[in-house]
Image (cartoon, rainbow, N blue to C red; front, side):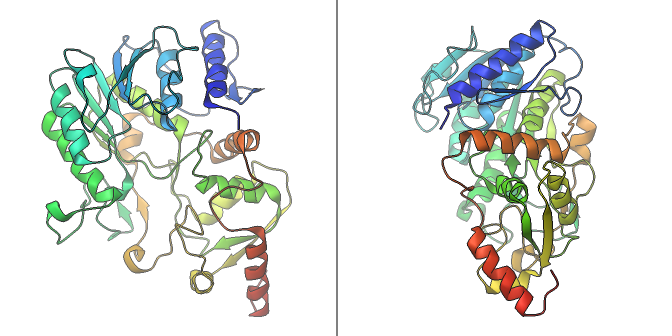
Length: 385
């Protein structure tokens, strides 16, 4: 697999092209694709000033995109991480980028006695981790941007929910909360306590885009590109939301530059998107002949194909997800987030995946053989193709 060093090297070349006025491009592996200037992001104007930004993390999926975007905007960056995953990842490509080594669980010494304008936290998962970091930095920065998740919401009780919807686990004492979403909810409160008036919380959905190794939405980009008859799960009107990682990091930098605080749901696209519109939007990124066959959730689940696991990116509207609907993104739109078209996200991610894949299909989703079996069973049961 081509390393993230190659990704960064090529991303740095983009930054050089931007600074010299050359038409920008999007790089994946060693391939320069034509630039898509104006299709996404909220970073059209010049930054109001150069910021000193501390990034907690920085070497995972979000980090390289965030570093590139912030450097292109002229900001000074410090990265704090354990130095175990991709050590020295950026040092060959971004002059002046500072790296600090430590551990969020028990070693924050490298952060002591320092000052920054903004902290962007991509790596905080437990409330204990976030408490230690936020309390140490509460007098060292003006703003703390915390990467949370839509999984903090307590349940899908309304067709459309905004940032004021209940979070955590209803009816359960907070000391007994566990799991990714509830722990992120508790972590949010640690930031708010340490940075009153300076907290920015971003609750993204599933993040997709170049560099995504979870393959959840990549499964659909790959499957539609392969062509043929494709299982379309559930009802064509089921809601779908996602977020391009590049739109997320541009939103982070925009929030930092504007000093914007508050809680935001950065759910793409700007307008409601149905599962039918999603699949046809993905189809717009490829020339392969495709035919979608809609199969009800009950039929799929009886055959072991469940939403959120075997069928990535979707949720079956049953059980805790009975009222699964749309997370409102009005506040994020008003704060300046902008989204790339779905077809651009799909095409760019697919190019990246093809250049970096170590297998013939994404790790998420189900096999073509299993799909063919279910399609045959659906046809035999009288389902329309």
